[in-house]
Image 1 (cartoon, one colour):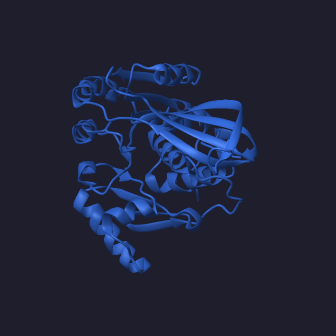
Image 2 (image 1 turned 60 degrees about the horizontal axis):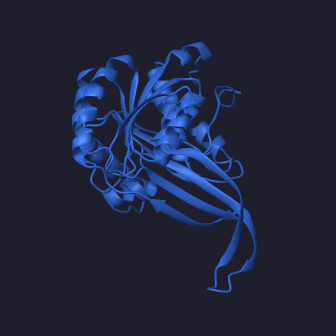
Length: 311
């Protein structure tokens, strides 16, 4: 029996997203010829599109589902950050932007021709830690107002103080969900749940040759980090939740996979919103899996509505 939830309950759920944001920029154009200067296609750009990426897309996913989302992040004081703020202002997400004049807001520019990505250009640098430390006070003031705390780590340096924040959230009795990055998970110690994909998990525990070996490795990681659960997202194999009671696997929603971009964002945002609304991790799992299945059927970083999810 899958636990469901009403739209009203969902509207009361409040998720605080903390992490690295970026601006996703898309340039679309026609490719009619090869450049005379080098063996590369010439793209005649006809259309531009901008979307919020990284932690901003995670918050946007939670808001699209109908939950209340807040976003705490550090950005530069540049064109991209003001663009992001304007995009966010339309979403109903309450934003708390720390501005660092030395920082370049991360921009991922994708050039699309003939329905495929031809190149991606990344503009970024790492924040200095003073501004991040300044975010801790804002974090403490936002904590009591939210039912779940979600750390969206894109390895851009915005979560240098994540251990302190986890300790504060834990002390306040809040569920803590983390989309992890990198090969050192020790800074996520004492979180409620982390949601690595296969490649990310492999970086941390090494490869495995069987389900039994995977189970042993994940459970020992979970115990070592004192986490309630690890949710492994496995694309076509669905996802598996490992917790103190063992494991629970939900199979992938069979549909045409159009684009996996941002599917992880959707999964964790859905989990966080459901947990904030009062569901257990195990009860939230099938819904999060379904949300991920819906979003891979859309192009680019996409989102899912409450109606789509509970149709």
